[in-house]
Length: 255
Image 1: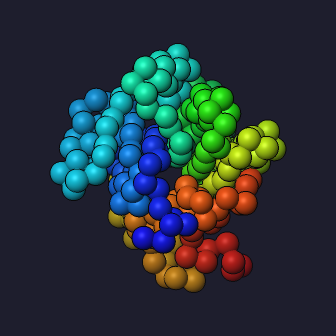
Image 2 (image 1 turned 60 degrees about the horizontal axis):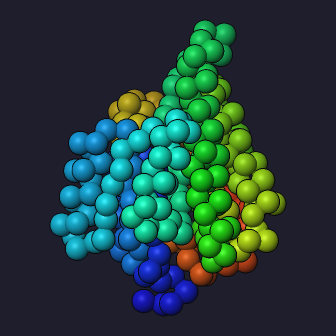
């Protein structure tokens, strides 16, 4: 493997990685040589994902905790400290979607989406960056944005606000942590074939709109995000900071 993209000796935490995009990313980082930590809210799904990774020969472990709960995140990092596990790479992937017109949207639902998609990235990255700074060896933070980091669609206001926030949070991380050799960047996926999007895939009109609006004329696949994640997690991106890279098949390039 090209040493620029070699993650051997590194440890990567991917939040929300028991399935979907998160699992594709944690598996891809493991293939690049990283020891990986799977996260989710349910121990059984985390354990199942770890089992699949270990069956492929990867160095994988898991921990179930709620990334929106500051105490739970702090406890997870304290436990890794006690085990001598040093997280070098963080991928803030955990996210949810909730579709409803704004005038019908309850504050609790707004807050739940913001907490899961935006605030959790702040909580997890803060714990990781504090340790990276103390170790004086730098590190990598990769936040997962969206096409809605750039533009809005009806009925997904809290998701749009959160993903727009991810773009600016990433820049804020760069502004504060770049001097410690921490690179904070983001990935903005286009429409990807995941469980969360299955209802949209099954909607014939929406499926047609996705394909007609995208120059690539198809949905993306979770594994097509892996190359960008490995790049941002590796030495190849050592002078890339505060950026969001869109993996969208060319969507944002056209009118």
